[in-house]
Image 1 (tube, rainbow, N blue to C red):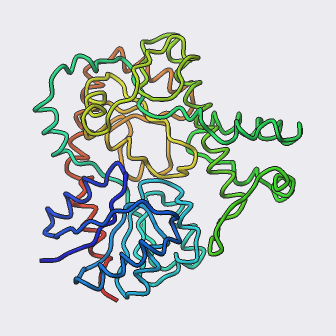
Image 2: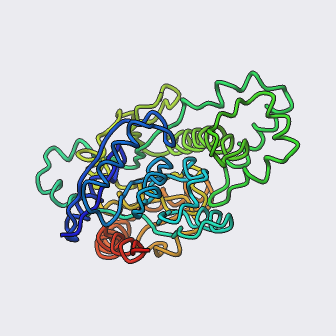
Image 3: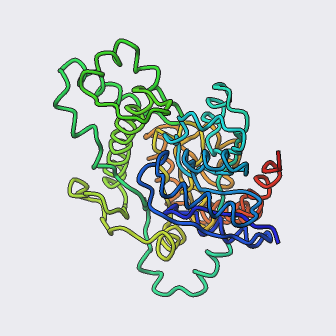
Length: 388
């Protein structure tokens, strides 16, 4: 039997991927340990080497990229395969990305092209997926689904715990005003990311005086990447999501499922967080409209939430992303919006047109159940994860 070694961590889609590998005939051996660091942990590296040498594996697999694991695989001469569910992966901006054992699969095409431009040879585009079989089992055994009925719902973080808020008042007035204007402009743009081009060399030189950039010796990341992703990206997501929820709640019944602070969302029904496996699909199935508001860090790709909504048979209303037309048909599988005003108009329309909304949800579910399965995606991975 074919066998892979899989590093287990708390990725939402880890269980679905492991189950699908097993359906495809692989024996999956798991290794788990909290890493002290993504690129240096001598104890775990030694343990991983021992496991690789003790048995014969086709390859080592992880959800997202781990430099430490790539380097161990390079040393041991075994393929290292990974598939991203987050973007961008800061851990990929590392010298190990050039290891020839790597087979890296990213769901964001913009990120793929970036790494190809850097000279990374084995990096591929692979959209995300959904396990409808698991969802069908959940629905067949679920009770009290009426608890999850909503007109409009959003499931996700509101990112109020972001590093920008912690550093904002250490900045001079000029920088603070500049970043505020940048964030306001980005907040209202869908499918376009202007952050990188607005972080000019002059702005970054001044920012260096106020932002402590910590990175390892082999890291390829820079101030532009770290600040745009970990600081501005999360703050913009907070602004986008709160504005949309507040505006929609002025005219519609809106629910949010989150463990974030919601005290400012006066008209929004704050329903707390939901478990990804046992509750979130019930929200998606039983809400008339499910919102997807993609964090700006995902520049072109379609996030996992879209597949989760469609797989649950839910109606998905999402912001426009450049890769949506490559994977879905607008107003057939789901509906996308180009601006906040477009979102508000479409939300009002589809709340009034039940049969049209239901037909789109049904078509979206049928499409992902046949075309966006984990088995299909993993078969693509296996084709490219060939021996040297």
